[in-house]
Image (cartoon, rainbow, N blue to C red; front, top):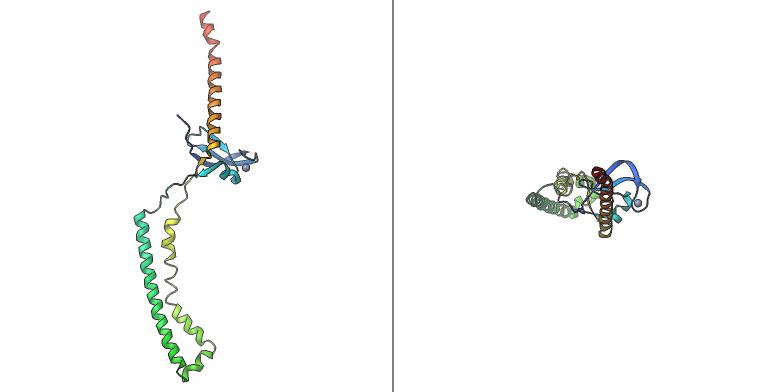
Length: 185
Ligand SMILES: [Zn+2]
């Protein structure tokens, strides 16, 4: 079977020299059935291979759309609430500028009290929209990251593998050779 350019990142117990810099590393890229593997340090991983994007096993496109719609609806509701509050404040300002009450904002605590009141009904709601939007972007990480070797390196590996196979076959043949004449004696 021809070698597939799909390598899985694995961690091994014993470190071996990196394919690029020869520094010991415990990160190895190996094909599914370990027909081929090469060690690479974290820093040279991107020099050797590119990650293969796998579709996240998370929510479907429909789920995402639903969540986004919910989020938008909530957002507009929130904006409406804000609009109402702004109107309230305008009324407040009109009252303030109306003479007698104009000295009140200068009193310590008056302005802050007003602000706290207007923001408190909003605060329990504000963290809610963050979590549903984060759901599609944080799927469970795959057990093994998938990589494709850079073309030059992959053809190198194929050649290397073919050479090894040939050597193994030659050895096999030479092992069988002496047995053949022995039988004829
Ligand atoms: Zn390296």
